[in-house]
Length: 213
Image 1 (cartoon, rainbow, N blue to C red):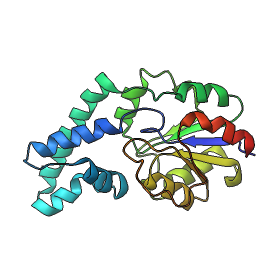
Image 2: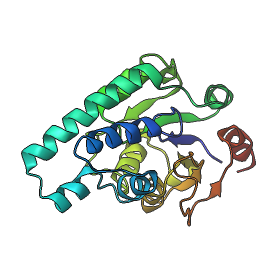
Image 3: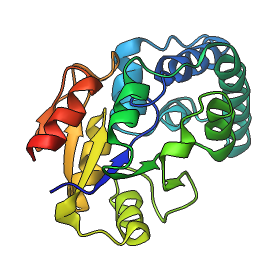
Image 4: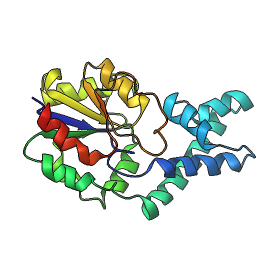
Protein backbone atom coordinates (compact mmCIF):
# COMPACT_ATOMS: atom_id res chain seq x y z
CA UNK A 1 0.00 0.00 0.00
CA UNK A 2 1.35 3.42 -0.96
CA UNK A 3 1.03 5.94 1.85
CA UNK A 4 3.56 8.60 0.80
CA UNK A 5 4.21 10.19 -2.60
CA UNK A 6 7.29 12.32 -3.25
CA UNK A 7 6.97 14.60 -6.29
CA UNK A 8 9.70 16.23 -8.30
CA UNK A 9 8.82 19.84 -9.12
CA UNK A 10 10.12 21.07 -12.48
CA UNK A 11 8.59 19.08 -15.32
CA UNK A 12 6.18 17.24 -12.99
CA UNK A 13 4.19 19.93 -11.17
CA UNK A 14 5.17 23.08 -13.07
CA UNK A 15 6.14 23.61 -16.70
CA UNK A 16 9.51 25.32 -16.28
CA UNK A 17 12.20 23.15 -17.87
CA UNK A 18 11.91 24.79 -21.29
CA UNK A 19 12.40 28.16 -19.58
CA UNK A 20 15.69 27.04 -18.02
CA UNK A 21 16.79 25.84 -21.45
CA UNK A 22 15.92 29.24 -22.93
CA UNK A 23 17.80 31.14 -20.22
CA UNK A 24 20.86 28.92 -20.71
CA UNK A 25 20.63 29.27 -24.49
CA UNK A 26 20.58 33.07 -24.27
CA UNK A 27 23.54 33.37 -21.93
CA UNK A 28 25.63 31.08 -24.13
CA UNK A 29 24.51 32.83 -27.32
CA UNK A 30 25.95 36.06 -25.89
CA UNK A 31 29.32 34.29 -26.10
CA UNK A 32 28.63 33.01 -29.64
CA UNK A 33 27.98 29.46 -28.42
CA UNK A 34 24.95 27.63 -29.79
CA UNK A 35 23.10 25.49 -27.26
CA UNK A 36 20.96 22.99 -29.11
CA UNK A 37 18.10 21.24 -27.40
CA UNK A 38 19.80 17.85 -27.70
CA UNK A 39 22.94 19.23 -26.04
CA UNK A 40 20.85 20.73 -23.25
CA UNK A 41 19.16 17.39 -22.59
CA UNK A 42 22.51 15.59 -22.43
CA UNK A 43 24.60 18.13 -20.53
CA UNK A 44 22.06 19.77 -18.24
CA UNK A 45 19.42 17.09 -17.64
CA UNK A 46 21.38 13.84 -17.88
CA UNK A 47 24.91 14.77 -16.79
CA UNK A 48 24.03 17.73 -14.54
CA UNK A 49 27.12 19.63 -15.75
CA UNK A 50 25.46 22.51 -17.57
CA UNK A 51 27.61 25.62 -17.90
CA UNK A 52 30.54 23.84 -16.25
CA UNK A 53 30.92 21.77 -19.42
CA UNK A 54 31.51 24.94 -21.45
CA UNK A 55 33.76 26.42 -18.78
CA UNK A 56 36.03 23.39 -19.15
CA UNK A 57 36.10 23.70 -22.94
CA UNK A 58 36.70 27.46 -23.12
CA UNK A 59 38.83 27.84 -20.01
CA UNK A 60 36.55 30.25 -18.19
CA UNK A 61 37.70 31.34 -14.76
CA UNK A 62 35.61 30.64 -11.68
CA UNK A 63 34.64 34.32 -11.63
CA UNK A 64 33.50 34.18 -15.28
CA UNK A 65 31.48 31.02 -14.66
CA UNK A 66 29.86 32.55 -11.58
CA UNK A 67 28.91 35.67 -13.54
CA UNK A 68 27.38 33.59 -16.34
CA UNK A 69 25.35 31.64 -13.80
CA UNK A 70 24.12 34.86 -12.19
CA UNK A 71 23.12 36.22 -15.59
CA UNK A 72 21.41 32.95 -16.55
CA UNK A 73 19.54 32.83 -13.25
CA UNK A 74 18.38 36.44 -13.67
CA UNK A 75 17.04 35.63 -17.14
CA UNK A 76 15.37 32.50 -15.79
CA UNK A 77 13.74 34.49 -13.00
CA UNK A 78 12.23 36.87 -15.54
CA UNK A 79 10.90 34.00 -17.62
CA UNK A 80 9.39 32.34 -14.54
CA UNK A 81 7.51 35.50 -13.65
CA UNK A 82 5.95 35.74 -17.11
CA UNK A 83 5.54 32.18 -18.31
CA UNK A 84 5.66 29.45 -15.62
CA UNK A 85 2.42 27.51 -15.22
CA UNK A 86 1.00 24.45 -13.48
CA UNK A 87 1.09 21.42 -15.75
CA UNK A 88 -2.29 20.28 -17.05
CA UNK A 89 -3.87 17.63 -14.82
CA UNK A 90 -1.69 18.27 -11.76
CA UNK A 91 -4.30 20.08 -9.71
CA UNK A 92 -6.86 17.32 -10.32
CA UNK A 93 -4.33 14.63 -9.33
CA UNK A 94 -3.43 16.41 -6.10
CA UNK A 95 -7.11 16.87 -5.26
CA UNK A 96 -7.70 13.14 -5.74
CA UNK A 97 -4.69 12.09 -3.65
CA UNK A 98 -5.08 14.64 -0.86
CA UNK A 99 -6.16 12.89 2.34
CA UNK A 100 -5.39 9.47 0.88
CA UNK A 101 -1.60 9.83 0.74
CA UNK A 102 0.91 12.05 2.49
CA UNK A 103 2.68 14.13 -0.15
CA UNK A 104 5.94 16.07 -0.38
CA UNK A 105 8.01 17.86 -3.01
CA UNK A 106 11.67 16.86 -3.49
CA UNK A 107 13.34 19.22 -5.94
CA UNK A 108 16.77 20.46 -7.03
CA UNK A 109 15.38 23.95 -7.58
CA UNK A 110 16.94 26.93 -5.85
CA UNK A 111 14.78 28.26 -3.03
CA UNK A 112 14.20 31.67 -4.65
CA UNK A 113 13.09 30.15 -7.97
CA UNK A 114 10.86 27.63 -6.21
CA UNK A 115 9.20 30.26 -4.06
CA UNK A 116 8.71 32.59 -7.01
CA UNK A 117 6.91 29.93 -9.05
CA UNK A 118 4.75 28.72 -6.19
CA UNK A 119 3.78 32.19 -5.02
CA UNK A 120 1.13 31.95 -7.75
CA UNK A 121 0.32 28.22 -8.08
CA UNK A 122 -1.69 27.64 -4.89
CA UNK A 123 -0.32 24.09 -4.75
CA UNK A 124 1.80 24.04 -1.60
CA UNK A 125 -1.08 23.40 0.80
CA UNK A 126 -1.30 19.86 -0.56
CA UNK A 127 2.18 18.95 0.70
CA UNK A 128 3.46 18.02 4.15
CA UNK A 129 6.94 19.40 3.41
CA UNK A 130 9.26 20.59 0.65
CA UNK A 131 12.96 19.77 0.17
CA UNK A 132 14.86 22.18 -2.08
CA UNK A 133 18.49 22.73 -3.06
CA UNK A 134 20.47 23.09 0.16
CA UNK A 135 18.16 20.90 2.24
CA UNK A 136 20.21 17.73 1.64
CA UNK A 137 23.87 16.74 1.33
CA UNK A 138 24.07 16.15 -2.46
CA UNK A 139 21.80 16.69 -5.46
CA UNK A 140 20.16 14.16 -7.77
CA UNK A 141 21.25 11.65 -9.10
CA UNK A 142 22.67 11.13 -5.60
CA UNK A 143 20.07 9.43 -3.35
CA UNK A 144 20.48 12.08 -0.61
CA UNK A 145 17.32 14.07 -1.53
CA UNK A 146 15.09 11.00 -1.26
CA UNK A 147 16.88 9.57 1.76
CA UNK A 148 16.26 12.92 3.43
CA UNK A 149 12.60 12.75 2.42
CA UNK A 150 12.32 9.25 3.89
CA UNK A 151 13.83 10.40 7.18
CA UNK A 152 11.61 13.47 7.28
CA UNK A 153 8.44 11.49 6.57
CA UNK A 154 9.20 8.58 8.88
CA UNK A 155 7.75 6.25 6.24
CA UNK A 156 8.97 2.80 5.28
CA UNK A 157 10.53 2.69 1.78
CA UNK A 158 8.04 0.08 0.56
CA UNK A 159 5.12 2.42 1.26
CA UNK A 160 6.60 5.32 -0.74
CA UNK A 161 6.38 6.28 -4.39
CA UNK A 162 8.47 8.87 -6.27
CA UNK A 163 7.15 10.77 -9.30
CA UNK A 164 9.90 12.02 -11.62
CA UNK A 165 10.40 13.02 -15.24
CA UNK A 166 14.12 12.38 -15.84
CA UNK A 167 16.82 9.72 -15.73
CA UNK A 168 18.64 11.74 -13.07
CA UNK A 169 15.61 11.78 -10.80
CA UNK A 170 14.97 8.09 -11.44
CA UNK A 171 18.56 7.27 -10.47
CA UNK A 172 18.22 9.22 -7.21
CA UNK A 173 14.96 7.48 -6.30
CA UNK A 174 16.08 3.94 -7.08
CA UNK A 175 19.42 4.46 -5.29
CA UNK A 176 17.38 5.41 -2.23
CA UNK A 177 15.47 2.12 -2.52
CA UNK A 178 12.20 3.68 -3.69
CA UNK A 179 9.80 2.81 -6.48
CA UNK A 180 9.70 5.51 -9.12
CA UNK A 181 7.00 6.43 -11.61
CA UNK A 182 8.16 8.43 -14.62
CA UNK A 183 5.98 10.97 -16.39
CA UNK A 184 8.24 12.24 -19.19
CA UNK A 185 8.20 15.92 -20.10
CA UNK A 186 8.68 17.09 -23.67
CA UNK A 187 12.42 17.49 -23.05
CA UNK A 188 12.88 14.10 -21.37
CA UNK A 189 10.57 11.98 -23.50
CA UNK A 190 13.48 10.37 -25.37
CA UNK A 191 15.42 9.35 -22.28
CA UNK A 192 15.95 5.77 -21.13
CA UNK A 193 13.99 4.93 -18.00
CA UNK A 194 15.38 1.50 -17.12
CA UNK A 195 14.45 0.59 -13.58
CA UNK A 196 11.30 2.71 -13.44
CA UNK A 197 8.34 1.05 -11.76
CA UNK A 198 6.04 2.51 -14.41
CA UNK A 199 6.30 5.05 -17.24
CA UNK A 200 3.08 7.01 -17.69
CA UNK A 201 1.87 9.05 -20.63
CA UNK A 202 0.03 11.55 -18.42
CA UNK A 203 0.14 12.42 -14.72
CA UNK A 204 -3.64 11.93 -14.61
CA UNK A 205 -2.93 8.17 -14.65
CA UNK A 206 -1.22 8.36 -11.24
CA UNK A 207 -4.22 8.01 -8.87
CA UNK A 208 -5.43 4.87 -10.66
CA UNK A 209 -1.96 3.36 -10.46
CA UNK A 210 -1.80 4.05 -6.73
CA UNK A 211 -5.22 2.44 -6.27
CA UNK A 212 -3.90 -0.75 -7.90
CA UNK A 213 -0.62 -0.89 -5.94
